[in-house]
Image (cartoon, rainbow, N blue to C red; front, side, top):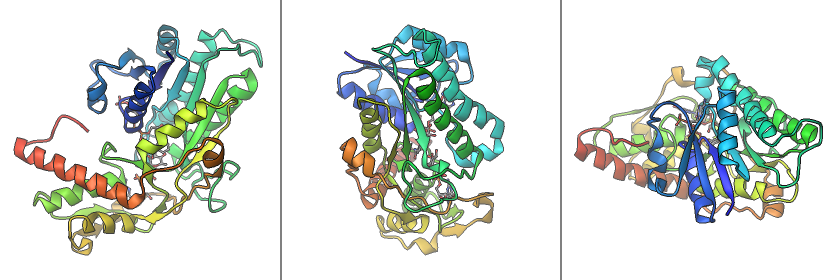
Amino acid sequence: MKRALITGVTGQDGSYLAEYLVRNGYEVWGLVRGQSNPHRARVQRLVEELRFVEGDLLDQSSLVKAVDLVQPDEVYNLAAISYVPLSWQQAELTGEVTGLGVLRMLEAIRMVSGINGSGSAPRGQIRFYQASSSEMFGKVREVPQNEFTPFYPRSPYGAAKAYGHFITRNYRESYGLFAASGILFNHESPRRGREFVTRKISRAVARIRLGMQQELRLGNLDAVRDWGFAGDYVRAMHAILAQETPVDYVVGTGRTHSVRDAVRMAFAAVDLDWERYVVVDPALVRPAEVDLLCADAKNARTRLGWEPQVSFPELMRMMVEADLERTARERDASGPLADW
Ligand code: NAP
Ligand code: F7E
């Protein structure tokens, strides 16, 4: 039985990846931080199958202890400060967690594996996956973006992810570690945090439909993204570590939609006219925007055999339906439910 350690297991992707690996016969451990971590709702359904180990990407020794205890075959580093606007508010912390946190995980693997000199990684080594991001492309140099497109990050988050990406590659080249990154484009689900735009929209649409909210305030409606379903993307993470050699891959659908398209689809799903409810709020426009992201995921398709299965219209409908159901439950319980 293979053993996996997932950092960020309490987040959107961590929960889908844990489910996927459990279904594939893995023993799955999740790294959780803080005393009595309150964010375990997303993995509540897996509580029988999952094991937890304490640790924090800010604390090197906790990561060494976690890797030493678990002795994993595979480490998936999904933990990060992942909300782009927060990265301007807490730029240093973002650098520490999203950037240097990757180095600390790599160092933990290196130390526990007893790798000291260059190129000395032993056989049967721990495989490492880094959650890189299309935000590294930022002000894009070409459309669509592939594994060779230069980076031009536009936020402290994007800059921290670029560091994480290059340090992962550097540990592969310096120590012979099996370390690879997935450069994933935006992926969403009913488990998406409420601050991200698709979930902000689907939740507002449900609340407006049920008479609990009057308007939806948004920033830049013209931003264009390549959005997919998170459940599809965790299959790519696993496939990247299942290859013979460690290689970085771009993962996305190759299809684009604007924030305005997402709004239109979500309101249409409940037969409402979006223009009556959406207010553009300049305070929500970012200091530097990423205008357009579109993946060229040819390598993922041909070498990993990866294909997304859920289209963006299906995804928006799935999210609106899930929020309608949740919001009705919240209304009946007269308060927010204790989950995401
Ligand atoms: P998410 O829902 O925001 O989850 C982030 C996770 O990181 C949470 O489990 C959080 O734990 C954990 N975390 C934060 N700070 C930590 C620390 N100091 N030590 C240990 N854990 C910490 O993110 P996601 O959407 O699942 O994304 C997963 C990863 O993929 C992230 O690295 C993200 O940057 C990257 N990514 C995401 C997308 C996307 O579209 N979703 C695209 C490209 C890349 P708590 O529950 O304790 O807060
Ligand atoms: O914004 C625009 C906003 O916050 C998408 C993270 O998972 O994907 C995510 O980062 C777009 C931006 O995602 C609002 O300006 C308009 O252009 O949903 P988002 P993101 O910034 O693309 C990447 C790949 C990651 O790696 C990140 O971790 O939507 N937008 N109005 C808005 N965005 C938000 N959040 N809220 C608004 O009111």
